[in-house]
Image (cartoon, rainbow, N blue to C red):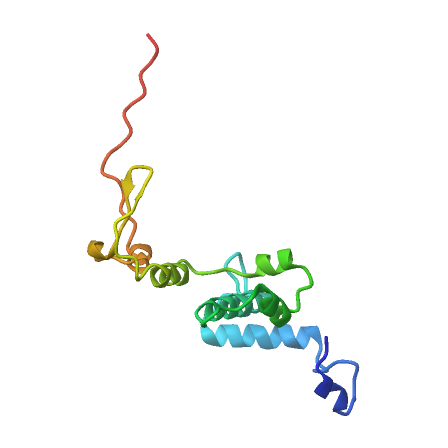
Length: 150
């Protein structure tokens, strides 16, 4: 949907930016090369990936606002008509989720139990953000060899 002020601009082309797709691709490759970003192979960065990134960043930033950002607001920002498609474009970071969980439970001081397991509290002196950022620890125990039926 075009913004009303775009209609007031003089029209010299049917496009807002009258450039070819080939020109845009060439410019994108030059920009990525200058920045040391891959434009070939499975790990390449495509222009379309920036749409995913922008929607994800707005969702993350909006979740930190008092009252958050609604799904309807995010949908209006992205232009998606279907919320299912919007959710496919939104990729939240584990670190951001951990920070929001820490903030949500920061005032909880009592120890709680769930299925017989003690949950972490302020006394644990570790936050979800620290847990997510910690390197993975490989278990020191290996599986026992399987026994043959006998």
